[in-house]
Image (cartoon, rainbow, N blue to C red):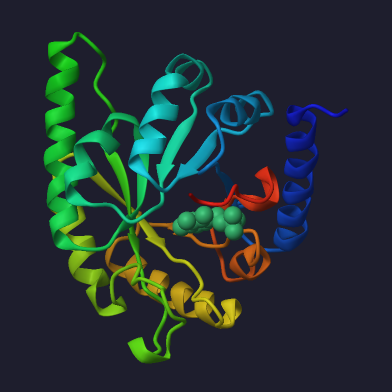
Length: 252
Ligand SMILES: *Cc1c(COP(=O)(O)O)cnc(C)c1O
């Protein structure tokens, strides 16, 4: 029987091969892979770290905080970075900044304010504990690429992300906020829409953002199903879950 680590290694290699083929001939740096480990145990994250993965993504604070705490020693030893990619309530900001390197899902002014305040409190907590300061929190603005009216969207799909018109305002707020750094933009291709078209629009928003914020180069787009389209559109960071870890266990 193959071990879980062997299985992860094989799937990881396949995904890395897809990324390399998609990026062949593309100008600029190769896209970074963030392995989305949500619903999978900390032991899988540890195995991935042993296989060379340095960036993992999580979408629920409770689950991410528990895994990050369990793997604190391993994380520190190899420099594992935790990316928060899910919808985030302001009352979870304080917890998220304890472990997160980046938040990809900044979508409203209240969340910018909450994250900035939380980073300040976290620095104070670390100072008091004699622990080293954390780095500024990397923030990506999540953009809602679904331009269909609410009634035309697939049922049950909650809104994720800011309207494109809000990008400039949010970018300015993040840049002004203490303890936060503007990384760039993030999006999920709308269900049932053409990902190439959606990511093409995202690339346009990114180009516009770069004119006023030239360091905000990150473009976090592309999942298991559509990573090739995202790479073609210029994604710098891919968030791949099921094609590395397997089908997610059903949610209870
Ligand atoms: C779960 C998730 C992913 C990974 O999706 P897969 O289809 O499993 O690759 C990427 N981005 C976000 C925001 C997610 O919630």
